[in-house]
Amino acid sequence: MNPGEILTRGRTAALEGRAGDALVDFIWFHEHALEHDRAYYGVRLSFALGYWTDLAETYSPARVALVDVGKRGEATLLLGGGDRSLFHEVASINQNLGRVRDTYKLFHRLLKVQPELARKCRDLAVGAIVEAKDFKLASKQLPHPEEFLLWLSERLNDDLTREGVSREIANRRREAYVHNYCQDVRTAMKILEELGNLKAAEAAREWAVALVGPRRARSMVSSKLVENDA
Image (tube, rainbow, N blue to C red; front, top):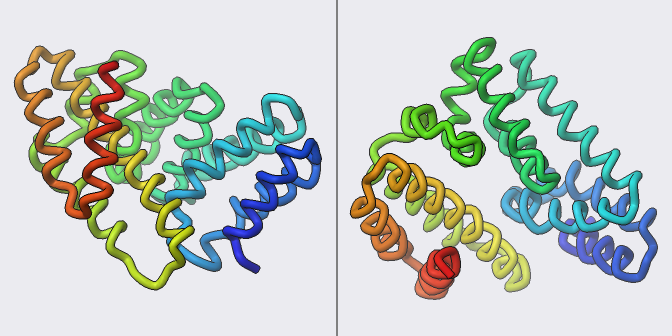
């Protein structure tokens, strides 16, 4: 089965009012897409969850199912049975459901009961920590801003230069990875601003753009970071 086709089919079903069919496809994509192609990692936690969340606004079974996926993931993490990717999944679900505070609470609990796992997930949690306005804790979870931006950009450039996928998948993947990259950059800037390092925050924005290799992606990053100020 082609995960991209399943996701598109689900989106079409949702737009046509066939909510039950759409939910089946969204659940399948979330649970099985990575078994077929790891390149769907970013799409799975961005656009696909967005489609599912849109459906949940008018179809309660979709919301119940999505909340359940998040709660099961959270329970697994607290028991030490999860990993960084599962935390990313739970955090992304909370983001889409408007429950970012739950990610902040989860990270606090992990610091106590699964500190090693919390350390591996801290960059994924820092956005929720910032939204909770706990800037001191947020600053402790990130390395030096320059090191953090280097790490983010290297990860983005690596993801964007993978070969062997169709143009449609490459475009979706680019949008998803750029979206996630800009979120992380804005989080780092917000921490610097709240701690009074305004010049460092502006420098971080400029550097975050310059570090992106592929020209099209660099242009997208520049536009998205400027949009945030509008």
